[in-house]
Every structure is written in C-alpha cells, then in structure tokens.
Length: 610
Image 1 (cartoon, rainbow, N blue to C red):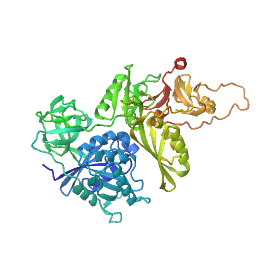
Image 2 (cartoon, one colour):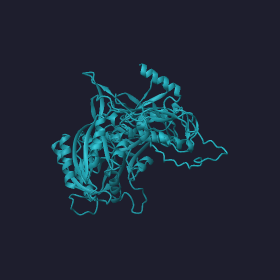
Image 3 (cartoon, helix red, strand yellow):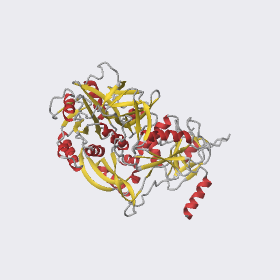
Image 4 (cartoon, one colour):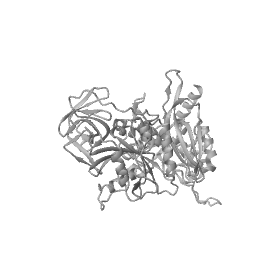
C-alpha cells in the first residue's frame, strides 16, 4: 500500500552549501512557523557546537505540510567526518535533494554523499543553490553535476535528474536561472512530483529499523527510524532484534513521537512509511530492528564505512589534575565513551593493553575533536594522544595498506607552488590542476591520511589564510613510506608554579611561547616551540633578582610577544608521538607523556639501543 499523502526526503550536500538555511526557508513558506514566531537562524542546528562552528554535526528530522501532503525532511551533516550519519539516514528516505553551490560546483563531500544515494537507487533532485552570489555559474555547475553522476555510474533514470535554481538565503527556487524569483513553490512541487511516496503494508506485523539514538532525561532511550511495515501503537509490546537475528529485549512502547515542524509531538499510532521516535526500550540501539513479537527476521542494515583514525583517551594524571573538572576517573571516561559508541556507529571503542586507557577510532580529526570538546564541556578531564591512522594488511599479498584521502585545495595562483611542494613532501600525488576563476587555482591530490595530520595549520599559514582545503576518504593503498614529522622541538618546563613574565621574556630567543605570564606550569609541561630541532628543558619560574644597587639596564620594561594559543584541533595535530594533550573544562595544555626528564632520557636510550 502507498501512502500518497506522505513524502520522505533527505537534504545532502558538501559542507556550507546551504542545507540548513534551505530547511529554514521551507519551514517558513509552508506555514509551519508563524510569521511572528521567534526562532534562531538555521533552526535545526540546535547544538552549541553546531551554532559556534556553523556546521551540522547530527542529523535531525522535521516535517512540513504542503497542499495536504506531509513532507518529512532530514537535514544531514555536510562534513566527511560525520558521513556515518548520512549513510544511516539514507535508509529512511525515498528521495534526496542534492544541493550544489552555484559558484563552487560539486565538491569532495558532494561526491561522497551522491555515491551513497545513487547506490541505494535514489533519484536526486539537484538544487543549484546560492544563485545570489555574484560569481554564480549555474549552467556550468549543472553540467559538472551531470559529469559527476556519470563518473559514479548513475543509471539513465538517475542521469535524467530534475534541476532547480535557488537561493535559500533569499527564499526562492525556480526551474530556470532567469525565471521569476518569488517563492519556494517550485521546490515543493518538485518534491511531490519526483519523490515516490513510501510503500509498506499497514496490516503486516510492525517492523522498524532504528537509525539514530539519543538519551532523554524523562523518556530514557529514544530511537528514531522509519516504519518499514505495519502500524506502531502506543502501549503495545515490541521486541528488539540484533543484526544477527538474536532477541535483545522485549518491552512496551511507552511513547510514540512524530515530527511536526521543529517539535516532536506524541501520537497514538503511526503507519508504514512514517518517520517516528520510540521510547520504552532499555537496550536496543542503532541498526537494531524494533518489531512486533511475531517477527523473526531483522531488517537488513546498511553497512557503515570503517574508521580510519584513532586516538587514545586516558584519565588526566598531571600534577594539576582534578582542579578544573569533576569527572576525572577512567571509569567515568569509559562509561561516557561507551554511550557515544552506542549511538554513533562511526565510532569504535576498544581497551588498551594496560586497561587504563581507551582507543577511540573514528572517521577523522574533526569528528574526534568534536567528541573531546563535548566531553570537556560536560566536566571531563582527559589526556589525549596524537591521532594515528589505522593500517590494514592485504589478505592476498600481505602488504601493508594505509588510508588514502582525496584532497582538493582552492588557492591563489601565487601560492599553488608552495602547496604542491608541501603535499609532495607528505607523499601526496597531484591528480589535477585547473583555474577556478578570480585568480585562483583548484588542485586535486591523493594523499595518505597520516601525511595530512597537522597540515591544515601549515596550509593556512602558507596561503596567508586565503586557501580552502577539502578532504575525503578515498580508499586503502600500499604504504607510501616514511613521512617527516614535526621539524621543531619543544620547550619543556622544569618545575611547578606560575609562569613569570621575566622568565618568559628571557626565553623568547629560544622559540615561540604557548603560555602567558601567570599560567600554571609543571615539570614536563610543554610551554613553547623550540627554534631548533631538539627538545629543551627550561625554567619559566625564574624571577628577577632584586637588589638595592641601581645599574644601567636593570629597569628595562618587560615586553612580551603575544603567545600562540592553540585550539583543540591544532593541539592534537601539533603533538608528537611521545606527547599528550591535557584537556580540562577550562584549559588545553601540551605535555610530555613521561613528565620526569630522567624517565624520558632512559626511554630515548632504550629506543636508540633497540
């Protein structure tokens, strides 16, 4: 049976191509939001980190009603590190809106999400967005999308995609670049015409695949998904089946929620094709099948691409541990990481051999950085290791394989040579170079993931902050050989106390400082970058000797250079293998893994001997 009054559609695009802004326009113009209603811009980006960074991290559902048809809309993340969200969401929808920037055209993440959508047999509706940009090139972007579809192996029906031209910011969409620009009606009509209504037998036993999980302080575990068959009714008994067919638990549905605008409203029942949220189950998780007691076979879940990067999370054991956070034990850290891995299938958690630290594997530095930032805001104190890539072994040849990423950079022509040289030193292979207009060049590379760790800051410095770099996982390839790591050493504090301005002033000739006067330091803490290649132990606590004898030069004013402040992502990318990032709710510090200088020397001797 077909639900003719329902459509399920996801919005996919490269990061910052306007997905969430488009949802805002659809909510206003469908009448879902009142004219005098006060809501934030980018209403679906409700998380603090999402609003601060201007990116979507978690997929979210909303719905609008247009001419009597309810349209469930799923907003998906645009960054490749959160691709696990996109892969799960595509199993809930019957169509996708593919947004492409009218000036930039298809970008690396566009390729990734489009490949996933085409593989599921979905026929995208292409929306050439940001037509209000002065450098918009609508027809060229449309042709580039067609070429991308052809490269990704789209069938004839998918290649015959409908195209709309829009400005989500100005609130209009049209079938041609020069058509009247007054409303989003053309986009609504395209969704009704080209997205198939959901099908499913409402009389069959109830079955639903859980695609997202969240914790609610009042409802407990809330599972969201699309009902594949049957009807879900409040207070009925259901069971959860794992991917292997085993029964996980049986429970009663205590809450059934449907998406209505920006809210979830309780309903008494929902039929096949609806996207709903369920509460009442205590153990079921993502990719489990929630179904009636008589169902025996689980719904097949879409496989998720494996993680490529890992970090070690451990309890903070520095001399100043426990002074800024209230969650400091390894038991608390483990419980929090287990909750994260349960709801986020793109993250894998494992215990280290020492049993006091945990290896967290994910898609990229941004994804793990967001997890760490979330935990520190919750009051956790952590020690984090340098990111490392996850190698594989070729089952046929036994050769070592490493993850490779597709990198695309847009830089001014004068900086192209510097970028090509730097990436070549990191074992990257250039695959293309073409002018992108406005004196800029677009250069494409295939680079090993380990060579890109820590490069973004160097890239911004080399291009004077004007370059833009996008990267996405491409696949595994044979090991590319050694890559030179950080060239400079670090300045290491030799004692505990508050840093003195006079001491830092005298140390400025040695390198760049990371701390300001008055900052808490301890033995083994990294306080700056050495100007040479070796590590140097220094004394940031030395104060000026005061005497009653006046002499020339004794009363010089201490003028310090502004210290370099590292963000969390920059700190993680900066540290070497024998260093850690100490993360607390108020501070981000760099330190040596071994704080005692004698222990570090002994370790160095053992390395040289071994």
